[in-house]
Length: 152
Image 1 (cartoon, rainbow, N blue to C red):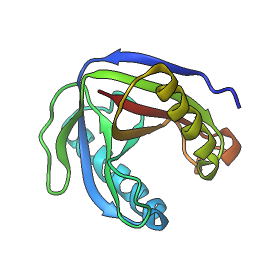
Image 2: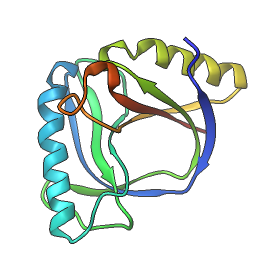
Image 3: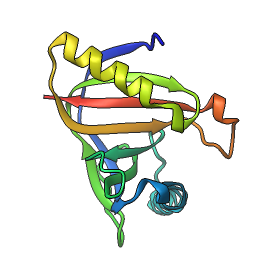
Image 4: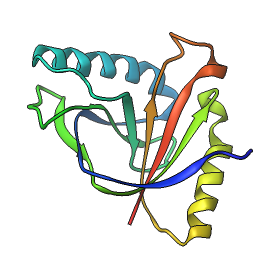
């Protein structure tokens, strides 16, 4: 399809997250509440997210997805209850901005994986999706998601 794929180097990014394990079918239910709870906590601390909501995928087992749901923040902040301080590690990342329905993302993932292999990089297994808008705000065809593979 001709996605724009780039390799970048980033600094560690502080986050506030909720960690969970869930089947993919439960994601829509879980994400909305988690995003709201985290934003509420960030605002209670007198802070604002410094970027879009994200989900970190630590495996691709569709029945037992290991997830980290969160927001980037300007500095390490204290957690509360299930909300934990975390970070996206510094290092090399391969990124691709995807536009369209979430269910039609597999070709973008395939192209990114092929690009990584052709360039001789090794992914560490964690993939992040950063959500720049939501199905509540725009039609599915207009959804913007940055896909990020962390590299060794």
